Length: 111
Ligand SMILES: [Zn+2]
Image (cartoon, rainbow, N blue to C red):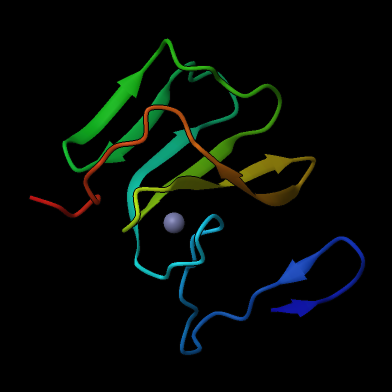
């Protein structure tokens, strides 16, 4: 990562990559268990992908203003956290949040 100023961080893609660590136990056996999208605009529903398929939830708490994309992750020790990409005012803010709601057990690609 290259810090370009006080507020923006640029990630150079295409390199060897980085290993995702659990923010709770620092373990590196982390798997994505769900991808969720709360789009901005007129679509009043959350779309989620997990090991069971694609889901549309019109009762989910939708974000106000810009859209939100979240990647829910689970480590081998059972800790759950998510990377939340909040799209607002032409910028994308990345936050790590522990204990996402209703976090699935199985990795997205599990059978
Ligand atoms: Zn952990």
